[in-house]
Image (cartoon, rainbow, N blue to C red; front, side, top):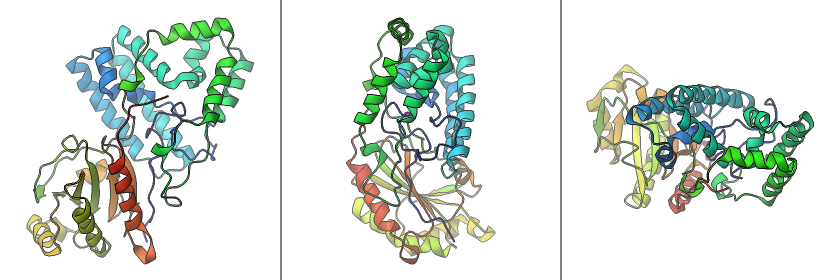
Length: 368
């Protein structure tokens, strides 16, 4: 009836590509064009430290923010896609964002942003066509680098199969460090010097936050019940449980006790539970009825009434109920579709475990 599973958002972006050693990808599927994940570094433009380094104007930031919103939504919509579809969609979204940056940034800003992205990518930057051309890499060198880059992909464990292993828990492996060393060894001394020049002046990567898929901002609420209005920006630093439901949905109702249990256990301890009521029928559009049903069910957490489905569409949500966990940095990390404990499924236990793990996290900057 529903897809009963939890996922780590491994399509892209939970962390930057392979160079961090932390990308959560279905790497055993190499059906994409070259077996190497899409370059997602254009998303670095949203980082505060990067923006400060580039000295973006208010007008530039406004234009870029709109482009970032489109890119973020495109990636979020791909969360359940197969690897080939996801990679193609991500590449397309990154190309659109990159085109926007090319038009918005001044030449000096574009050059510095390129340097920063090369710092982040490290050895994987050698796969970029512009870098390969600048270094005058031979075809045998390119093929050797590509073969070494593919060794970075190691199968990530499915969260549904192993709730103990999460992408953010995995440090850069010796295998990946060895891969980087071997990739640099492919270069001649002259090429190494040229690559060093491409990197430009140093940039402190410890200032850069993890790059994840942002939870969409709440929008166009028909009403707020039990408090609000709230924004994702307001909730930064909190673990946020966002659940989509409608009061006429039996599967949704069966999840209420778990939400109330989470509220009792984690409320006031760094976790915010938030419902988004998106109607399925005309009768469920009655805001007073939504309020009465919430009181009768004992739902005391904030509820956004989403009568025009703006938030449903922003999240590319497809089923009632759906539950999402958002980390302290505002990134969508895990989700579960349908009843949490449908026919013995361990959804409540899994998601409670994930909440505890996200609570325990101390957000750290991007490390190579």
